[in-house]
Image (tube, rainbow, N blue to C red):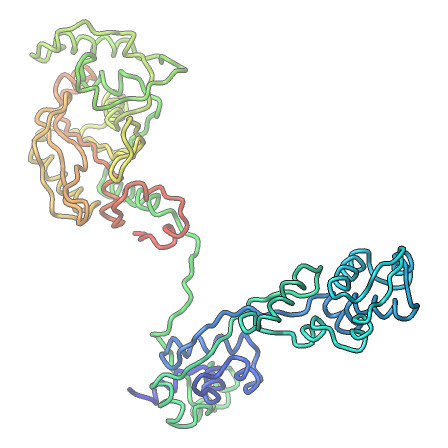
Length: 503
């Protein structure tokens, strides 16, 4: 241990406190020996403890002290003693006379009469109080309660049996005594602290700041400068910052824009048409069951481009000039106008493909809030964010899609442990799912992907290959933020929010 370096890190407050420390010294003794303020000593002790020079033991104790009435009784006497003297002065006293001449409150008078009767100090004969022989003796003696008040403050745990009974009796009276919790600090030097305190003059001067005077006069050359203590604990600061998941989504958006993608936007309250029908998802098919949509009561239906509806209807019923036979059923036009909360971000892709603003070649993405009925657990929520995207360009194939999925896993989930596995979606062929391995949750599905079928693209006026994907960005965020419960992405727990990783 380099004692010179350790000594050089000591703050002036530490240098003042350390020399007066001895084994098992209490805080009050340090206060008297240093003439420092209490807060200054507390800081010095905390710093010394952080450096491993001392150990602080706190002993919590309960003490009995005088309350406002107790301080008055200590000076003027207990109410029962004052009443006893009043009766002795007049030989006898009625209750009305006691009220008039004793200066006691009605409550004090009642307590005093009860206490004197209990001591057999007075009798009540024909409405008048008279002293008994015991009462006369008590006039010249100190009551136990008076002696108890003179001893205060006392530690509650140190009371004997008689004092405990007096304490219980006085507790019933108004503002006579009170109890206070005190933290008694005792300081013990560690082996390192003992060596340092005897190493050399700890209280030697040191300079903590290079003020202009020292620089102008050159005196800093002859001064010992206090070393920076880079290992000392410092208070943690919880400054204002973006919510961790909000920040992650903003960074995700920035990365897509940097890769040349253009952002897509659309309504949360969608129609069956854009959410499912335009994606060649049959109205009767069980594939719709996995979406568990929340349907909207009002408005129940929304207006659509009827020319587009007609083309999509034809695709479902007979294939719409694609060489496909379609699904061979009667398409329900009214149902396609039905409103629901968006179940997948792919609804934005169909809207974009049908838009007159679509650019070919083009790359598009969206961070879409989606809703599906689900059982809430560590990896599922009924509302979630989905990163949806499409690339429209001649010559695209499945290899391009696999390359994009690998890029997304590395760029956004920061993992190379991935699997691209076969899947089935009504609107893509071929189709695939992206899986990645979480260090705690194991393999997690991050989303689905594929190449849009002609039955999707041609009714919307597109004759160019379109690769598409929809990734669960919530789960990708769990990878990046090292969170193992999806509910923590939206947590309101301040303790969690203060300590969660922010990328």
